[in-house]
Length: 342
Ligand code: GLA
Image: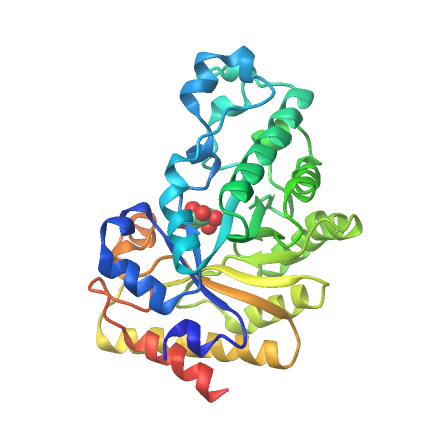
């Protein structure tokens, strides 16, 4: 049994994938066997969908209604539509991987160009969200089942200072969800997504500053716990975080799971497998005891040679369930075993 088959009565199993998989038939077969959800690793982020050339050539025309382009997502969306996996939309509004010129007056690329005012940025935000959702929903109806509406808006115990807070203000995330609610199909679930969500101060800040105002307006359907772990991540603390978000009227999705491990020795890969098994047993128990409505678990990458962690950590990482040849590691069997043991 594959990952998606083993977990099908509980939650979707997904993977984040880069564009280069579309050049490799065997990787695509592998994706279809193991996963029933995919996330574009980078190609659905604002820097990929904003049309730099059009916006910068005719800034007056596009000032309040940014031009967008969908070239980079066609392969993913056609693949999903034709072959079955559904897509997690990632991500509409983020301070990162959104070019500075998008926040500047006249879309200026000058380093210190003045920033656009609140009214302009709210119009840009609404029209960006509208354009992305409407185009995708018309061309590939029903393929996207969830959107990360806002990514990583909390830092240091409060709202993160960013070009969004500097231009729109501290209510920017509320507007993002209001616009997403207005334009998203009814069946699409709207998520807030962040990293280290289980660390107590961060969990509390997310609940206070983001989730409660959104819940009050019924604008949010789910909490995305990214879950970029390392071998020392405390799974008891993680459990507390899971239960805490799970107690809210929200779905929970694990959106970006990986476990950094720079040691590929057999002993170390066995420890990795044990960590994955403990985690998946916890996730299943959580679902069965109704402590959280977990609706999806997505791995951030499909095999070790494709993981972002190697670049990010500055050392080769072996964080996933498959090795660079797409062979299952002990961690893969451990995750399957957890499904049948619990
Ligand atoms: C964050 C983002 C993802 C991705 C990872 C690292 O978690 O949400 O889109 O960029 O960092 O690759």
